[in-house]
Image (cartoon, rainbow, N blue to C red; front, top):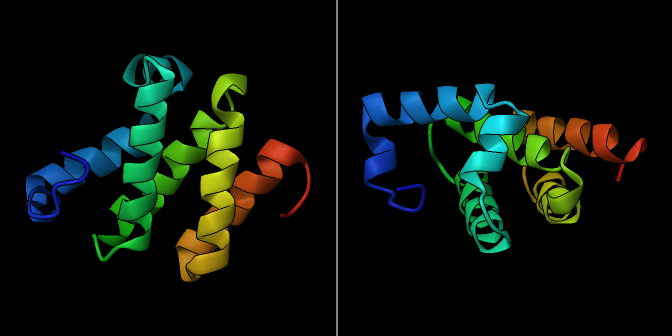
Length: 110
């Protein structure tokens, strides 16, 4: 569903996803990303959402979810790669949010 562009245009769905991504806690993230394979697929899909033309809140919520994935040691490096890419290739709130999570995860910018 995260990679289906037509579904992401559905008002009720993108609002639900944005809320889910923005409010997911560590336990919910661990359940959603049950394996390394799932982590790679979800982070890739969320990175695509963040760089796409989806609703603004959905894009920034995707960044927030990636950042919270990085709070778990197991997925930190994957999340940092995605966040650094977003910080370098996007602008506005997506870039600023990416930079903020990079600082939170590493203690420094970049």
